[in-house]
Image (cartoon, rainbow, N blue to C red):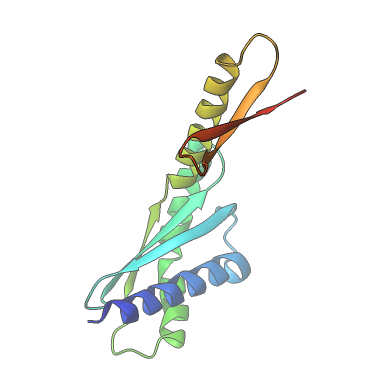
Length: 142
């Protein structure tokens, strides 16, 4: 199947799943959920919906249990929207990408704070190479 069609179907799956979770699910276990992306198999039989859940690991597991329980309901909403021969079976996967990016940002900020010169100026970032090929460095003055 053509890759652009798979991408369009995956986008519809992401859209329907996020709208259904946000507006139509009444399960109290499912809260603080963000649908980050969706992947669909080449034969349109299976779909993986990646979700990011804010909260403690116990809350995340409880929410994933609620999402697995509601997969059939979301699949029925998807069947109404997609005009295909088969409706993909939906599987929810916890996406750790957002959590990892927050952790990386914290580590970078921590490393910048430790490597700050004693005069109090904090190097912010490099702006990239200039016309002579040398990178300029900006510093924030308090």
